[in-house]
Amino acid sequence: MLHQRTPTPSRRPRIAIVTNMPSPYRIPVFAALPALTGAEVHCIYLTRREPNRDWRVDDAADTVRVHYPPSRELTVRDKYIHFNTGLPTLLTKIAPDAIVTTAFGQPYLSAFLHAWRHGIPHVPMTDGTYESELHLTRMHHLLRRIVFRRSHAFVGASVGSRRLFASYGIAQERCFQSHLCADMARFEAADLLPIERTVDFVVSGRMHPDKSPEFALDVALGVARQLGRRVTIEFLGSGPLRDQLQARATAAADLLDVRLPGFLDQTALPLAYRRGRVLLFPTRGDVWGVVVNEACAVGLPVLQTPMAGTSGEIVRDHENGRILPLDLPAWIDAASALLTDAALWQRMSARSRELVAGYTYANAAHGLAQALAFAMHHGAAASDPA
Image 1: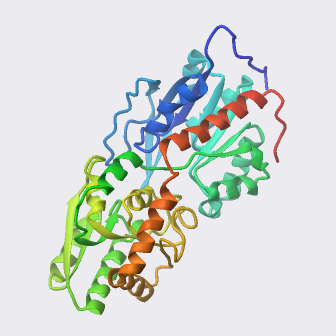
Image 2 (image 1 turned 135 degrees about the vertical axis):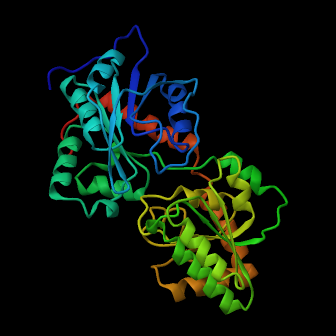
Image 3 (image 1 turned 90 degrees about the vertical axis):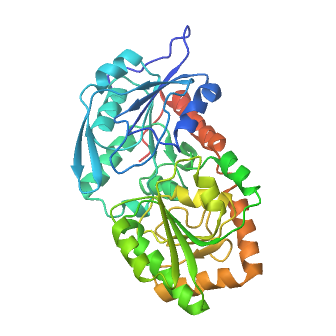
């Protein structure tokens, strides 16, 4: 470390956040930071949108300063790897008093090294969990250990993120939660509308093998046969499996009413969920799953796999849904029970609202602000946590 930076008393402190792209789930959190911290906040995005995202967002929050430094992008299967060589120059110009990074690729490591060399408190922020990173190589784990040893506070989206930090020996008092969340006000407003729940199952997300949309269709088909009636299932989103789902829907039209409205923007989503009765979330691996926040906010019970980070937090087995492996008969039985047992549905619906109530942008922003305050206060004296 070359020197320890001391904030200049004559100006507001400055915070730089380096992340991949504007997200509808993070923009409001970052926008709230200036009021909570008194700092000037700079969001440095590596791209405006990755090709596999249908988000439509407005990044021009009046409270933060937004930067898009020139960068390149490498596509590896469904992953997008960003490269940027201009970050140190931009960070020198901004002169931040704390730097937040949200991943471990080249630009983020460049920002971390800038922080380390100039004595600027560094805060790693992740959606990842202990379970989601078990498959990483020794080199990946070594890299994280190096970064964590030279960081000052840690921000995770979930309890699973805290387990991840703990596995590297990070003290819990240095860990803070800034959970992923939906626009609760918008969804709660939709929940008050007298809309009939005419859709048996809602599936929300990209139509990709990792999300198992065809498994969800199999569940609906099994329920239709078990209940002896036509079942309605609506897929919110788009993706590479759309044509296959459409073909299967046509073949099973006698048992299923399959609706494929495509991508819906943030204004249309609450009403789409409000028409549903149960969310099916058969993911093969999600570090969180914001679609669950959205569904719970309008009172949907949830059937999901243990591979979602929401498991055990806003979805609890037998409380507001079921957490099940991809076992088709088990899903069919659980889904059928929710559609036929009114008391069970009402109890789980109410519990969904209770469990998700605290997952707001305001609370997420407070968690990140607390981490930044800790880092900036203890940065000069912080010792290696591992």
